Amino acid sequence: MSKIIVLGGSGFIGGHLISKLLENNENLIALKHKNPITLNCNTFNGNILDSELLDDVIEENDLVINLVGQIHENSTNFIDANVFGNLNILESCRKKKSNLILISSTHVYGNYEKLSPVEDDKLIPKSQYGIIKLVNEKICKHYSSTYNLNVTILRLSNVYGPSKISGIIAQLFNSIGDKKNSVTLDNNGNQRRDFLYIDDAVSGIIESIKKIQPGFNIFNISTGIRTSMMELAEKIEKIVDDKIPIQLSSQTPNEESIWANNEKAKLFLNFSPKISMDQGIFLIFQSFKKRN
Image 1 (cartoon, one colour):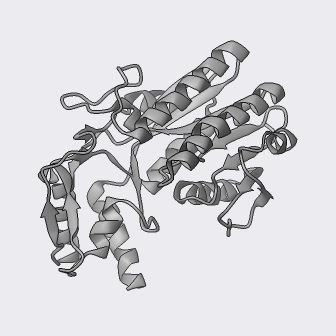
Image 2 (cartoon, rainbow, N blue to C red; image 1 turned 90 degrees about the horizontal axis):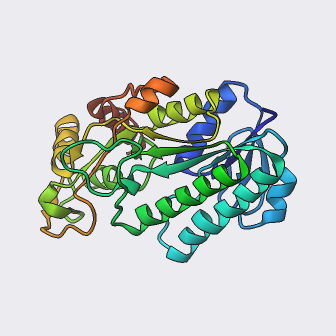
């Protein structure tokens, strides 16, 4: 492998991944698009919708990590980055015989109540996010089987950490003790998610880099543990010793339960999450106190 190319390095996960790769003295280059990359690494300017740019940057035997196209408020941009951008990446990898790791999501499973889904279980996403991620995975599978590409899909569960400014955990922390800034919890606070601390998410990606699998492979990078939104709020209240104003809604706009079984990643990638939900919240609290 000549170098690692990180696409989406300015995002929450990308920034932490680049930092770890630099610690490991990896030869890497990161795409810089709209947002700056403040870490001291080699970068190139551009957009994954520019196929010629990707052809120029990607070389034979490179490893491309596609983190682009996480949740985006603009549906058109989200679809472009996930579908058309990933097609451009796959085309460049095909031409240069390079490997690809696509960061996907456990949202592709949809609602699973009784058992945590494994990688070959039925995929029934309800949200637009999950549906588009599933489409992207299918395109990757087609390219892998048709052109003999090594493609690894990593389905990450809900990643959180101290520097993440979006998502339910950030909302809850920002509402501590502020009665005018309440947080609405759908399904009366009973929606459940599999929360994965950022260091564990990065660890899963690093392990997949070390152990590139031939052909097309999918791994759940998750904890296999569900936490309801109400349980999450109560955990935060206990650690910060303060109240969070909560509004309960009976609406359930998306899946009630999203989680995933991580046994395959444990077996093949030596992946094992280390940070519990309580530990993760405490680490966020420490960071929160420093900022406020």
